[in-house]
Image 1 (tube, rainbow, N blue to C red):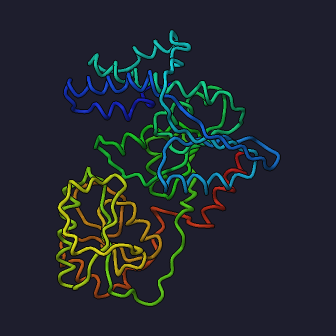
Image 2 (cartoon, rainbow, N blue to C red; image 1 turned 120 degrees about the horizontal axis):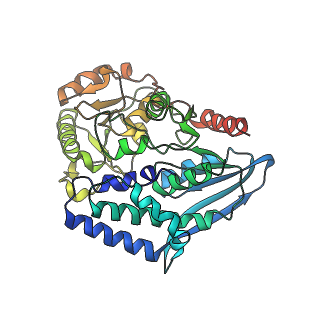
Image 3 (tube, helix red, strand yellow; image 1 turned 135 degrees about the horizontal axis):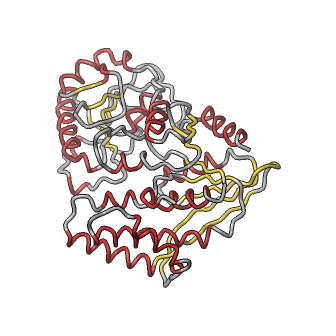
Length: 379
């Protein structure tokens, strides 16, 4: 088992941190190890004769739940759906086989004892999942995101037992070549036999860092086709915020949106990233319109948000704020750096409504069929 791939996200949490912060992380990790345990919600469904699948998910968000449900529904064989939540209470199951687990302590490559201690305690916490999941009998394991520590661990555990392992994709990955951040840690640590990608760009990215993984482009079935009837009315436009790592770029983009709003005399819809903390921003709410559908916007603005690529896949006019931050590629004609760029482009808005499917391939029913054919093909 490659412990480094399990603890990679935790190693990132230590990056450039002071010892006081690391001590706090160790205290929190100890609390989780002793008092936090996994709680399974299990559904068994019977289907066609063939292999038995275990679908496992530990990440919870409404869009993740929807994606997981749609994809797992396309497996027509016997399957077990295991969704993990957490509960609290004494749990010392990590002590099972502790002598064998201790050898991984020395495998953690770091010069800091605090770093090593935190990473090892975090690893021990994830090993508690084995006791619960080991009771299931299955042939093929499908995890929601094997860059997550618990998914990564069980994939490695069952690969050692000669099980076929598959990971889904939960969001678009950005190529951060030469940069060390949360996203690059994620796509560099795929351990499953198969990776089911949303599109060709991410397929190339995964294969570049994980050449032994088999990648199939299956798309995103939660994205439904959208047909604009005639020209969009100039009632409002939409701004897609990035996560708060790009707080400065979010602020720059919304200041451009204010300028565009003033010239066009229309308001805009601000669509937040799920992780945004609005206390980081001073938003002038007089410019905002609420309770509207971004698909009916006159046009859309974003920075590195996946929503840009979803809109372009649907043939909607979405423009990308051009900075030095790595992001998924778009044609240069969609880039803007100032309000004047946008105002010039929207004169011929229909020129920016063609579908682009390289970042996101099949969608809707076409995507569902891709997943169905994949599950049938690995039996």
